[in-house]
Image: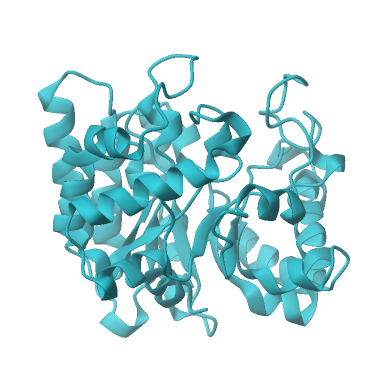
Length: 350
């Protein structure tokens, strides 16, 4: 089963062969890991050929960073600058005109953990590095908060004046930048979500509606699908409802394959009906809270292959699961169109 609606994939990752190792990404320490090789748009279009999307949003890939105190921004964030150069090469046609047209939005890394001055410096570097056409396609930023698993360290960052002021400034910028929120209940902890509900209050405090930064929550905040604790579900649900109470917050229906499996083995069925049923308590909360108007489809390719039920053939399985979720919710055709593309176009101003 595949969607008959035009699909805009709101969450994909790419990297060239030159970055497909531990020098480019610290998390690629195992050269035999399924992701430790080149993933470019031609690989993506092959994977998604059953239902080719009309466009994609690229999301930063957590490139290796050196110690910020040791050198200049250009030096310690040199891999993040190479990421911008790689994206520019796609936009400017080095990978073909089809790839350039497909890459409609970009969410790049930004040093939101280093205060307003460093962030402002990064904006200048990014604009200069990307050139006008790629800069036009940069719609927002992400800094992976889920990786900070020490509660005190997490709170010290997200409640800092610098972090709050940067997030506030994004919506006031002439480009109306958004911020992708990567927080994780299963591997991080429920407190990451609970803490961030308070951050959102601070980010929107005293800011007029039209200047509020759009926040795009990744992967349903990675729920603990396999947890048997009712407390875990109740606390996750409360956070989702809290996020949804802010009209400028959106949610990505994405990233489930890596969370549905409790250990190293992949998801154990390719049946979209079974998988949609397994996720139903969580997807019901998301749709009840955000409505289809603020939920968007994302594949999380190629990460969806890591524990996906068909390995590198998992993209079409996920789209079938999403189709099944929308059917079980009895979504109208207009609501389905929002999830498949309309919501992402609005949130990312495509």
